[in-house]
Image (cartoon, rainbow, N blue to C red; front, side, top):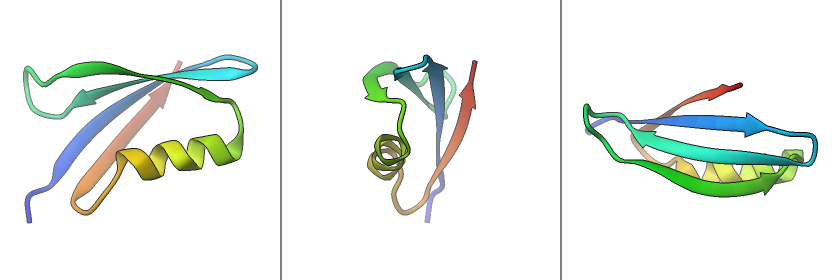
Length: 62
């Protein structure tokens, strides 16, 4: 199985979190995913949406 890496950037604010994702390969697509509420459940849903079998998420925040 091929391992896929996604880099997730989080711009954290008091009420919301802006989310961007970059594909792991060189020259991969970078896209703005949107904003989510700064709440545990919203972050769990985001991670569940971005991950899957063979996907590794590398997450950083400001």
